[in-house]
View 1 (cartoon, one colour):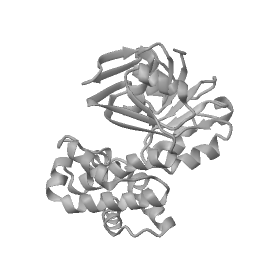
View 2 (tube, helix red, strand yellow; view 1 turned 30 degrees about the horizontal axis):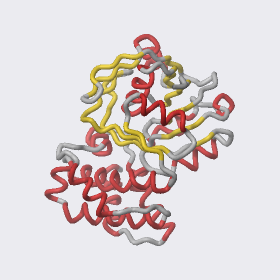
View 3 (cartoon, one colour; view 1 turned 45 degrees about the vertical axis):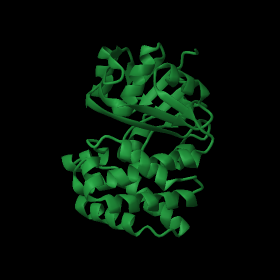
View 4 (cartoon, helix red, strand yellow; view 1 turned 60 degrees about the vertical axis):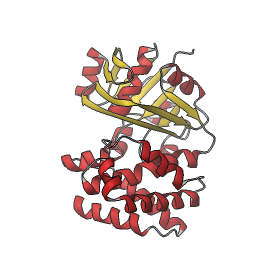
Length: 292
């Protein structure tokens, strides 16, 4: 197994989880963050408490600006903080590394390719329930920790598999990105609308949930993905009733939200292709008004 030099931009729930698991396997992990978080991680490393992986404490570097070459840069901040976070990764320092975003939405791909023309920007998606509880401290709930990658990051795929994540490499970038959004957008939008977990959404907004899934699948197909609304609904039925979404939690807490990266992205893609999405539009507009 080749040991990788991995930069984690935004060591929150997703970045901290992956960083801790890779560092535990001996990879050189550098977390790019603000001064307080970077200093804490540099001194104490990353600490993960997980239902699946147990308690993990692993060493990591903490810096504010990337200055040395790496093999892989994982891009994992909130979409609302992406532009600001990317200032920590100068294109000249990054060179031809693999840049792998594990973000909600899909519009970030064009941004990253424009910003890092010499790098290999490889689409990625993750399904996991993980959150940062304090600088460098991550809580992973449940056993779901599944990563999908497009081709071009084979060494990372092997390292993530070795670290214990469920990894799949698939050839269709559009399908990879839209598969996640086809699940995430309906769940995030409706759990936020109700301010309640997925179980309550299934019970009280079942018709709206089905309509959203079908509408997002229609947009995904227009984008070139092989979207299957029935399969998405079947998977949703297996998800624990207590599941909440980060959009819901951020809205309830009064934080910046990823509504535009999730719901807004669906509406913009639908407009590009002339796909009618009345239920999605109504829900997104309601949440936009609520968040003003």
